[in-house]
Length: 247
Image 1 (cartoon, rainbow, N blue to C red):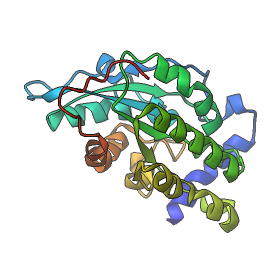
Image 2 (image 1 turned 90 degrees about the vertical axis):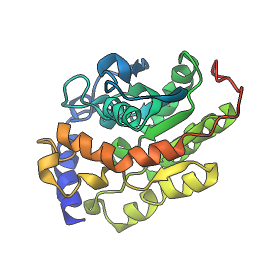
Image 3 (image 1 turned 30 degrees about the vertical axis):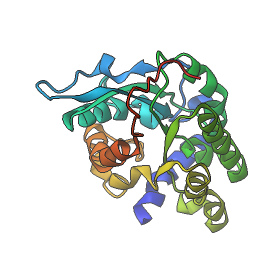
């Protein structure tokens, strides 16, 4: 994991050199969620099985497609991969660059309430910006706990994409930050991918010049490494049960 520390060191320096708006992951906040199908068409001639499965990709720049062209982001490519497996997936992209867990919690209810139908699954990728900005791990844990609690209250299943603290933040911080994701996944019975960036973190050719965000090919690698987990996280539907509305 030495390259992981090198990769994040550059971001830590950049994030520490200016205000939040100058950090490499920062962008104007928005609560709108766009559907992946609006940016990338489903593979042709793939027989889709069953009714539509709605997934909400709720996260930061790793979902927003930082540095990529429209249609090249993780939610778009994930939708295409699931459809290639015959799963009738439709993914709404609620990724906002620069989001912390606090910002995510603040916009969660609004985002869920404005979906055309209740999601079958919410995939969560938040916490990286907390770590880069030195936000106490206790705050990150509390915010993610509240996000998962809101999904529990609404009866929506969650898949948590884990992060790891950069080694140069020290063992004490890592000891507080790294256990957040597995502990909360157990508490809320959420599905878990322990480290979302595992497929690209030791491959600099799959990361952009900032050394952390994936390139187009890097996104493909992330999708290849996680699509099966996403498919498994989708809940089984009881016959005749409709999923309309958000309550």
